[in-house]
Image 1 (cartoon, one colour):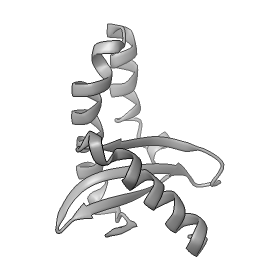
Image 2 (spheres, one colour):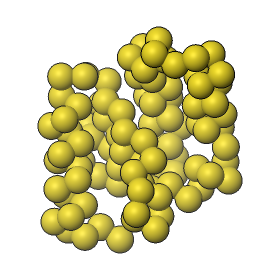
Image 3 (tube, rainbow, N blue to C red):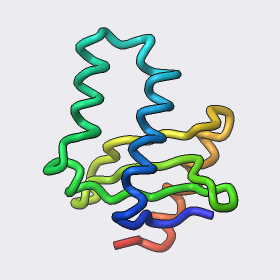
Length: 102
């Protein structure tokens, strides 16, 4: 299932983003780049302008996409199962376009 995340679910989503980033992305970043990403995950003013959508396997959050509230930029996208990343992100994108989520 794919749905918009509640404000209460944001911490879980950002934790997923950090875990996936740390495992798959961080090795290709400089220390400064990794620290900058970590700062992004704790910038409440910036995060308040992002809408989060999650992909679930049952009750477990397995993927997320963050979209700026002006709907002109995807700010982040992560999936805990790399092999499903494309499928999940395509599904989220299609759902947003199909239902014109506002």
